[in-house]
View 1: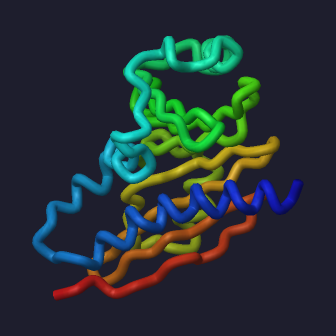
View 2: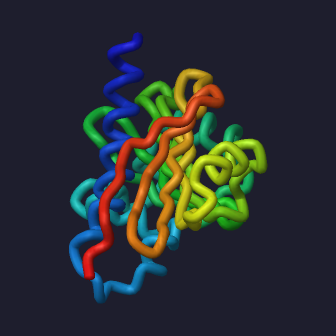
Length: 178
């Protein structure tokens, strides 16, 4: 079970890291695109696996999805091997939720901006990095666990921190290019 959790967390974390590494590629890129939670959807889904409509999705999956995410808007389904990824929005939050073929939720990743971040998590981050601004947030939920990935920027650096069970760990730190 731990291996399965680590595999899914690793996949989710990889998608977040792919997004963050694009910061160092070009200095002239408008950084606001990285703050837009909808940008992350381009990383995970691929057009060749997109399902044309929800009729292609198992009724068990749709039943569990509709029960868990009643306010979901702009739902897009992608088949990934034997699993189904739902990408959707709820208010200002973009979510990617992976379901198995029986309709069980494997994991869910929410992407949002600082204003949606719970005060407790924000306090942990800002008490350690007061000179940084929060640029984006991802919350990964799997097997009852919540892991937060918070992207930060200062005048000279970009950072990513991971918060789980109130413990913070710096997972990425690099200089801005001139």
